[in-house]
Image (cartoon, rainbow, N blue to C red; front, side):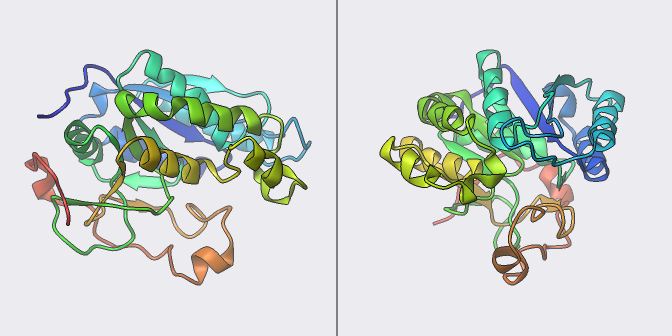
Length: 273
């Protein structure tokens, strides 16, 4: 028995890279079910209020704002005066669950297949207690197969309200703790990891935290065997990652094919294994 969603939101996060963001938004506009979602944009500010670090020029942020304003998706735009980073932006976007029973989240360096939203909806209807992402950097399997994954990457994913309510308390504790720090310097902040550990709050990135909470309080996270999207170059998904972790593992090399015409007729997924 599948879960039907009466109201689905699409949340897009923008910051600094208007050229990447424009590609992400254009691909979402081309999705076959884009008009069935209520769209929201979250735009971060240039200077972090805690550390004083500047992470973007004002013009870069304004260019992203124009991308959202000019889109046919009619975004409801939320802007931060100061830089809050993706963890707190994601927490702010979680308020969408007050009005919607399913939310799809897209960061600004993913180009989706025109069937991405349709397939993500189908997968979430079938498996509402999983977080679902339709990107993988290897194409090995069948189009209608998904697999349980422990990998933390979580761009372009969807989550039902049913699952979110299970992790909301723990993620909120994590977000509240991060309000006192510059998220991008958390790994170098003396004593932060130990202080959070005493409170049983993770210090990890938001995507690792969501992945672990989804496993602990839901059923986990699902990835496809055949990818339906691509990242925008090695300076997109890996912009803030280390050379050791991403470049040397060739994680920026992606399958060239990610659009399959038969996805227009695909109506169900199966969990592999």
